[in-house]
Image (tube, rainbow over all chains, first blue to last red):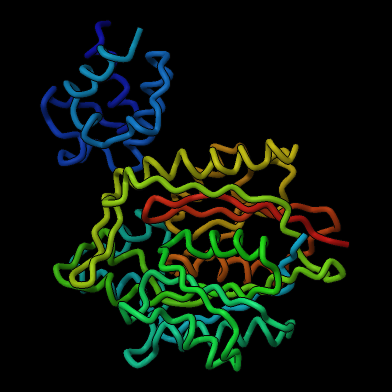
Length: 78
Length: 306
């Protein structure tokens, strides 16, 4: 699986939704994630990609869509 | 070391249940409970002030343990005046005119910070009183905010007399970081602004981290703490902190279901209820924790004296 597919798999798992979000779609406005779901998703991304997201990076905007998450991971995942 | 000698609380009579609130907000009562674990919250009368609630809670505390007070610290993020804050007026009503009284205008985490400061001073009445129903019902109504908040006051008496029984305050960690200062705020006009996504993300990490750091440096394992007394912000958040610490959720005393989130008052209201039935053995630990606007957060570790 490529990065986008892995991100989508995490989102589907956390949100318990079968349909994949569009890459640019807001995960909050579309109802995929609420505040607790967002927190869970970041924890799952840390496990999936072997990274630690520091508190200073915990801005909802950074994790608002699949494409933004991909951009963050490109910068921070080894 | 200073000790918490007694607790007190006051809750207004009127109960605002989810069904009544759901009608006003145009949402489902079940959604409210699912979102925050709150079934009802208390709402003060229009003529009932932060000072009135604080005085009632302080009297409840002092009835249980009347001591000489050298300092009053009053936490409130919802007091009626820009200045003076309620502290001096509360002191006057309690017969403590002349005793220094400090206002701590800190929502949510104010009582925790006041408790940690009181431990360094001793002989202090720590009061937290909030009338959050007023800003929470300001137009334009935000249902994510309106469902949370209630009114009330909590108090504890801290003594520096080493012979006093009670909960010895062992250690504390306090943090403030203005990076997120705009994520929960209340101006002088208008409603409460809250970026719930950011608040929950940060609180979910910062509260367990503060508790873990505090326990680690005192060589106390989370599972050996008898009771956690946390700011009653949201039941889902309380459960999440318990999970992060790998502690059974019932160790986290919770009254949010029936009191709602009373901001800085909530931790001491919960502690006051808990303390009435808690049967702590000598040496048993209790851990207080809070997180709130600012952001300010931290934890206080206390141990039952013999």
